[in-house]
Image 1 (tube, rainbow, N blue to C red):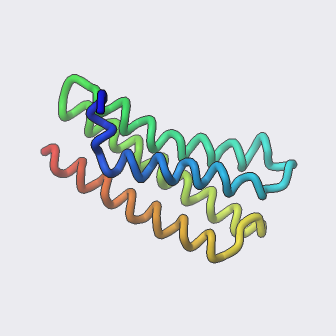
Image 2: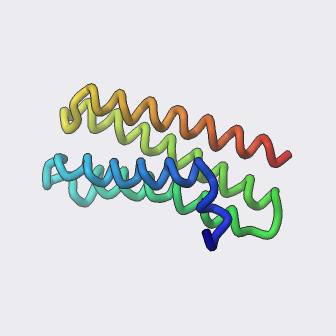
Length: 117
């Protein structure tokens, strides 16, 4: 592996979840294409991108800052999931799957962040 972030479990999981969110949004109505669909996809991608960007930083403090951004993006995904559920764009089983996965991912990212201290 050429880049340090590729070895991180949180990065690997966030990459997988980002792809799964992308696939799930294919079932959202076309009227949401430039709103909720775009928002949830960007937030899911941002979790992954912030881990990668921060990992290549110059200090632990900088990496920690990017991990904070990553968790915040994860929380944004969860909020979008609630909107999708409430608008009946996503079955409750799918919502529960993503909710649980992002809950675990955010905990893992926070644990990684705490290990940097």
